[in-house]
Image (cartoon, rainbow, N blue to C red; front, top):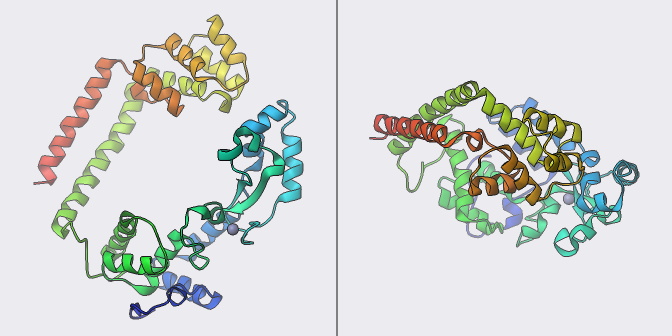
Length: 340
Ligand SMILES: [Zn+2]
C-alpha cells in the first residue's frame, strides 16, 4: 500500500481501483496487518450468500395477505421463489440479495405487493437511488470510504473527506467522522498510522471519556441483570404484553397464552381481539393496554407505535422514579470520578 498517492489531479478511477488483483491485494494486506482474519472474512461472505428469507417475508406482505387466504400464501410465494432465486438482476452480484418492489410501495401502496412486481436486487442496487453520483465505480458508499482509508491512508479526517468528495461521495461530514472514529480505534491498537486524533476533541479528553464510558458500561450491565431479577412479575407482564401488541407477528396460540398469563382471557372484547388472526389495529391495542394496566397516554402511544413494551412501561410510577433516581445518582458519581 505504501505512501499516500492522493493528489488534486488524482482521478476517481485511480483512487478506487477495483480490479480482481487490486481487491485481492487489499484484503490480503488487511489480513497481514491483523485488521481482519480469514475466519471473519469467510463467515461474513458465507452469511452474505444466504438468500433472503422469502418464506417468512413475502407471504406476510400486506398486499399478499389481502390477495390470498391464510394458509394459501406460501404455495404461490414458493412457486415465485423457485422460479426467481438468483443473483441481483441489476449488477449480477450474488451476495446480500434482497426482495425489491419494481414499482415501489411509495407509488402503489399494498397494490405493489404482488409476486409479479417482486425481484431480487442486492442491497447496494436496492439503495442505489440514494447515490447522487451513480455507482462510485462499483463500490458502495461504505465500501468506498473504507477503501480510501486503507489504501490512501489519509492522515486527518479532512484529508479523508477531501478524497471522498473527489470520488463522488455525497454523504455528510459526520459520516466521515464515523470512519475516523474507527480509524482512531485502529490507531490505538497500533494498526493504523494517523497524524490527527480528532480535530476538535483532544487526546486527554478522549481518554477520560473512554474510562468514563467503560465504567458506566459495567454499571449498566449489572443493572440489566438486577432489574430482571428484582421485578420478575413485571418482566412476565412485559413479555406477555409485548406478544399481544405485536399483533399478527405473533401466533394466535401464543397470543392466547399471553392473555392467559395476563389473566384477561375472559374479557369478551379482548378475547375477540386475540382470536382474530388479523393485524391488531392501533385502537385494539389501546383497548388491550387499558384492560391490562394503568398506562399513561404517552406510554400507550409509545407502545402502540413501537410495538414494544419495556419493563419501564410496566413499572408503577414509584418504581419508575426510584430506578431513574438511582441511575441519575450513579451517573453523577461517575462524572465526578472520571470527568474532572
Ligand atoms: Zn446489484
